[in-house]
Image (cartoon, rainbow, N blue to C red; front, side, top):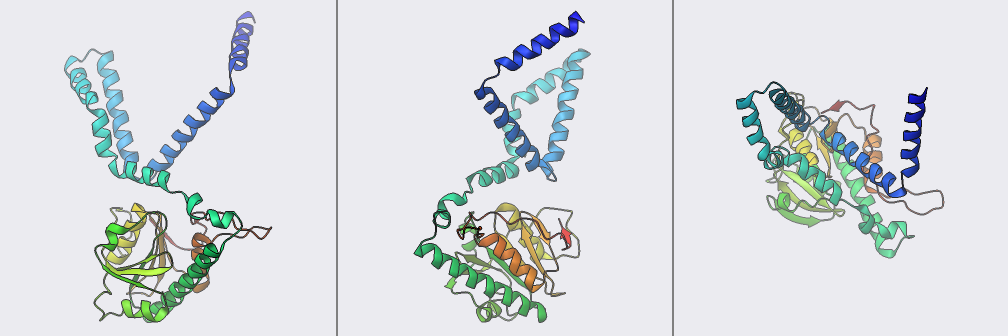
Length: 297
């Protein structure tokens, strides 16, 4: 009983000594660890971490059983481990830094603060753009005309735009249809939409390296998933073989969109949500609500 009493007093004294800054410190570390695990899940980084854990276990065993050669080899490895980690986790680190750098606060403050003339014009332009993309997607789907439309958000796609032809035109179903007409010179590439305008077409996108994507999906879908992995862009894809409308966001491909579902998904991602008081909430990233759609990763 005395032993339990002593331990209880130690724990009680430790709890009493905790200050507000300690709680903040623990909360920050927990947040960082949670986001690190979230970032690594279902990526190549998860397998790399498992491999590093086995190396650490091997080093501990070599020290325990006095295996001098193995211990020396692993010590030399750990001397360059920081540089090795930067090289191995380069794609994941880049994605993490891009996510940290994405902030809707500055760009959409006008919506939060009650709305201005500029925000109303921007909202009107976005609505017209969404309608044009949806109408064009449905029309292209009926004729089984392949299309790849990338809607830029916070991550700028200047390097992608440089591979295509700048158009800078107001979006409309006829223009989008002409761009992706199979005899048109720009139909093979992607169309980039920036701030509600068709900014460029015929652009070359990076292909995804995700090997779990169905072999039934071609280059167009793999390119759409690839650009969504490297940016926060929303990608609308129309299959040339089946006419199926798909969407790629954050490296996840959802398929079999109807007109209503596509309209709702784009409005949810690109338009500010109106609250009960009539104001506008900050625009948030697209939620993965489309559970009824077939998911392809």
